[in-house]
Image (cartoon, rainbow, N blue to C red; front, top):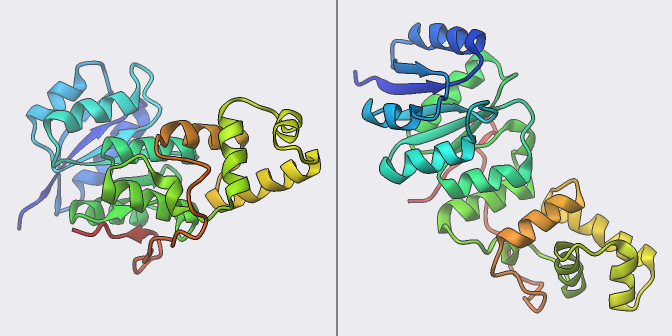
Length: 243
């Protein structure tokens, strides 16, 4: 039986050693190294030819997103799973664009943790359970499948809501937006509320982050664009990336 080669990158020593011990108990997994995430660990890790990389989002010595980009640049076929306690949706999109295949919460059960590794190793994308089935999971699917920064056209919004998104991305507050669009502040607040719900986001900053990341976003885009299909896995926390 071919064992899945796993590289663990975690700067917390206690957590790193605990995860390593757990992984080594699995007959189908082989830990090729357990690294603290130092600046040269991306190069060290690539030389070990792992199948899956488990990466802590909060590395103290370097930017984890930069680590992913460095690793995927020279080892594009390696599957990367990031580990975090509370996922920030806008950051997850950036990780997907960088080539991450899976996400696992640090408070996941052992079974969920191992299932994520095995599922990703087989070529399936895995999202954290709190985001499963949400609009955000469909956006992540689209980014993964197309590799394009145009996720907004897959979100059904009115032209006025798209105008509000553009103005938020320019740094305007509700009063300024109301003046620009010649409408009441309460109307703007209602639009912002609807936008947050449709994009499965929580703050205006996240709206602005998405708008800046999506160079193809235009207020004149049609508001009747169909949503991409999403299919959950057996445990309702996976979504398959079409080949």
